[in-house]
Image (cartoon, rainbow, N blue to C red):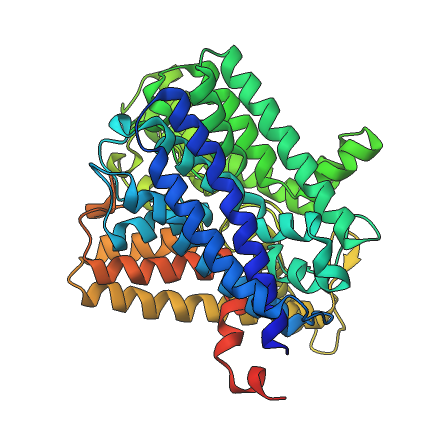
Length: 482
């Protein structure tokens, strides 16, 4: 482990991140909203800090190991979100305090989509754009972007890639070289974003709204340029486009890569993880529609429209809204919220525990039942036609155990700040799953939560984005031993 190499790379990544404040500054000048200075100040502070880290260590070159990747990923997501909060604190009237700005920045970059802001409609255009852009950058991961465009990371790029790509199967690459893999992911990501933007514009959005919502849709983030979210447009066409791109983004990007390279779509239906997600969403939508119809909450068409959108939005952890599902009858709010714990496929921009882990947990449970019937049988856990090594199966249970333990600890922590139980468990679950919407007092926004509760939720967002172990490993004594 080389501290100087880590500091050099952090400096480079910070200087790279400073470039992301240029587009919102140009937006500010275009709309003349008067807050360009906030982004100029953010660029200056970020570049200077990056230079201070880079220049003393510019000659430090050494191959990155996986331990270095864990440190860089955890530190950079933390540092990036802290520096990303600068424009939110500096734009003038209506700017956020330190706690709220950091919360909003973490929520954007981790694609959680929880907000502390009320009156989003009245924010300056450049701030609206910046929030959406934060989610877009966080969706695929700026660390993966860095691997793609910074040759200075050299052959150690795999160490960063493995800590950044979500899911239990970390070693699979789409191309022989990790740099080419990262580039392929970003090409697909950018193409989907452009297609989503064009579709939104054809459905009636302005170019500004279409760009902002395409950022957060493909990133499965949930930020919007309006308090009413997608419901502001009251358009079935826009909602269907949003549902379509949320589904696409919830599938593994390796499937999109195959579709792009081999020009075929059948593999989406052959992939066990994608197939499970489609069946799961179809079943949940059916239950929701029937419940809404039987309780006369909506008429036939409106019930189907709202049910489909909210199920896909919540279950994929996007968090867009066309209706307040927290007020729906019976167990529906709880059912939809729990669906977010499943999340999307591994290697997607969605949050949650990931579909593949749920599949493996279910299959291992069935294996234990079969072992009771046939004690001497050797039963392999298979996903499709592939046998899953016991090491991965054990890792999934380890992840689940750590997930439950951390959820419980943070739940107790948030409740200790004076938050009621429903609000506490839903906000912690929402943050840990990178979902956004919550129940109880946070059903509309998180602004009224105590400051300490917000900091706990910031930690939960980071743990969810980096899939827990990337952060937890830094707190083990064995990690720091030579």
